[in-house]
Image 1 (cartoon, rainbow, N blue to C red):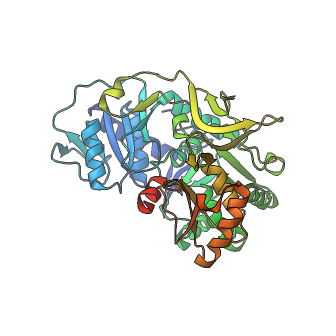
Image 2 (cartoon, rainbow, N blue to C red):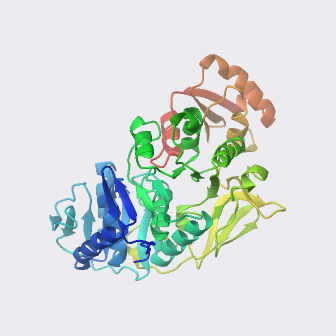
Image 3 (spheres, one colour):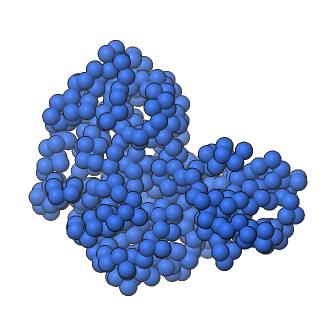
Length: 458
């Protein structure tokens, strides 16, 4: 089993779930039993994910049984879920969602929520295909990333090595398991013989911090929005001395926050790591060493073992064994092999500095044309965040205007902010519109949901 390591003791904890703790040996036995149940199932399944033990066992069992599995949020809108099932026609489904009339219950003690399709689709599945994930963190997208078991295993081991994860580490499942970053936290800790503490509570929940204290959590992973929350909460005031490792991915974190959290961890004798990743590269491509957070706080670090980064016409190109096989938009694509041959054009703009550290500066497609001038929406956001009163912001292209949404902003502050932003961008104020919003819409992985923002703002 690629994602279960042999820790120094078979009794070492693997899953901590409330009052119950499963050792690596017990988890291994549970995965064995579940894999036997999936052995007679068809080659493709859907796993409707929650942050719970059943999801973890189901995922690991699919890998062990060599059954390709697509991971989706259990709370996916029913219409979107039905469209995904119709598009990919899985042979089995596992999780809390109703499966539809074409499926019959086949659950047992190891997988009680398993349902099998009455009539299998004969379209073949490529032998290397192991995992399918949504590209964006949204729940209804039919465009999926195709990952091999080798890519999943290599990336888990490379992350565990880069973060120096030891068997006594205990990480929160504070990110969704259907999201590549959340899934990689699970994989990298299990492959290192460490443990994960199962929770579905968010960072604002008192229950989460009780869990951290009770189970002596050592590591928390969060996206940039999560670090804005953690900054306001103040880890020192939360009384969680066991937390000595913080990791960040899922978008650019402001350098000031990188320095803040690196210093906080240094005072504890711990580490902070900013990282860069994409689902298309299984999870993560680069890691910023803790010490470099003080000298290169705007960087996302250096490539993981086996990976390499190049810049082509401003675009970041990554090469490594964790690169996806390619995309899938329907069932027929699942028979495809390795389309990319280990090379991923990320769609991100960036550069490598003189010390070899990668910097991400924006997206290739994140531009708007206003009054004949090409404007980078990422630059607009970066400059808008310089305002003293600024909170989270998001910029989208409108009709001959860039619209900037300012979370929690007072309406009477917007005219002055607009004038300052226009001056920094060297555009006429009529090219911009600043709008107050109570809370920016976000995807399940905490990123700004630009599609929804555009639809609501149209």
